[in-house]
Image 1 (tube, one colour):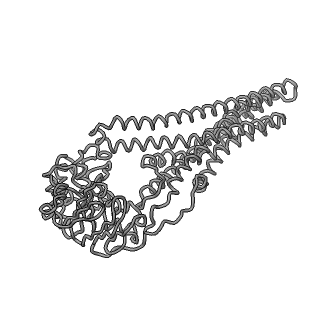
Image 2 (cartoon, rainbow, N blue to C red):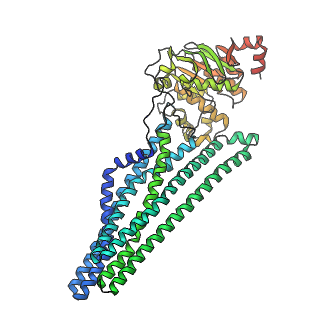
Length: 567
């Protein structure tokens, strides 16, 4: 695999621009409808002032009927434009949030890992949900911002027609209010970004605790772990309180400034009417507009806050979307046969490991140090970029770094000792793709038959998230069945029987050897049953292969091996 190329940065601003660009049609329609809503809302006090003005001059039923009809048209326009405008915008918002969730999830699920700068799965989950939703809010924010501006402009023009001083008061007051709130919104954006980061860390800590809950209870570490989570959660709570305090100050300031402007407009209009410079109808219109513009002013003044929150969420999404691939796959495919060769690999505790598993051979590796087995499994699973460690790994005669990741996954499967169990059924966990191949044989070989027979639904028995309704041994056998059902050319099993009893372990060892006959199989284990079932055993000690023979010959002639694996 090649050295990864430097990806072009995609900052939060670019993510927001992308969201706006691909929803331009919906935003234009939403802006027109919401602008019509705000214009109709503004027209109501204007119409009311005109009605008062003309009714005092012409006291006829016809004029009254026209006035009532005009108000009915305005109210109908307000109702329908709001209804359909918000429908368009919320549909676009929801769709855009879905797109970003899928894109972030796709980054996390790519076969080649990304360097996400220390983000844990719980943090990525928060980014793929809450941050994606808040980023998509920009789709609604911009049209609402424009429509609110329309309302303020219409109100200012209408008041200017009555008296220029009233219109100028609205425009100058709006600019002053926005200037004050723009400064405050920047602090909200920074605080929100930090709050989201701390909430994400708390989520990641919860995910870690759930994964390790059983072991924690086993050695009594659950109280210490809970204390660690409580500290992280407390940090998130304090930051949330800080953000809430700033939000409250922002909302209170906005409301006070808006009310002050409305009051100023009303008092000015009253003074002008008292002086005889505007009519009674114009006074009614001015007071009505002063009350009305509080809503668009409130909405207009809140928009900078939501823009900053969307920007903060977009910046967090950029951490995942911009993260470079750990490695860039090559174009080649392995030769048929399925041989596996590890040639002088240096990584972690491995100090030049070298061995070959011939096509169709069943080999076991007895690692005296569990860390060495884990390091070797990580290298074979391509969880470590090929160019970042010494030596090479070859699959089917080809260096693993030159193979496409699809070819690696198709020909080589490394099943970890802690294989994940997903919410669904036994069947969907064994055969996620739904191919239906090898399920029966895999279930039998992994000794999962008793679990299947225990439930009336059989393979369709419901499995909870992380296998919460299964025992440790059942989860391990289910993971093994999934690996066997994949039927890959090369299968690597890492401690597949640590949670099962000795009798079941013996049966699994025989079944796996039988099922995998003619297929290349490597097992990293200290299980005597699996070691005995292998064609040969390699001893991994001090980071290198120190011995090679059958399990029984090693038991008879190697005291250190006997002490390490005999039970």
